[in-house]
Image (cartoon, rainbow, N blue to C red):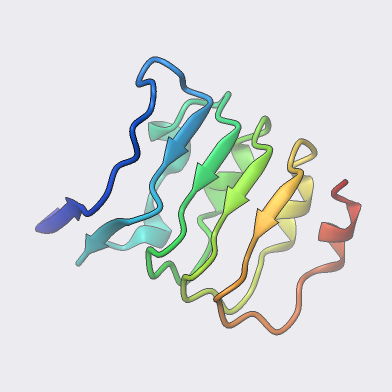
Length: 112
């Protein structure tokens, strides 16, 4: 990765895999959409903050995070939301504000 750096990292318990805050991580010159999150993130992850990252497409691998309860994708460059996010049965909070999304798939209505 030629130019990647962390602008801000919240203080957290590094032994607690249930929360990972990447809210201000900038991965310049890197294809964020191609990241293989399931190879990097623990499957028991419950909260993920990917806000302010200029993400244009939600990585399909996020659907493998079956225990995910909160997903913050706000303030990115998303234009659509894949219907597979509706398969995340544990998802309780999905933040999409500050994107370019005109409609969300009906499958998201199944989330409680």
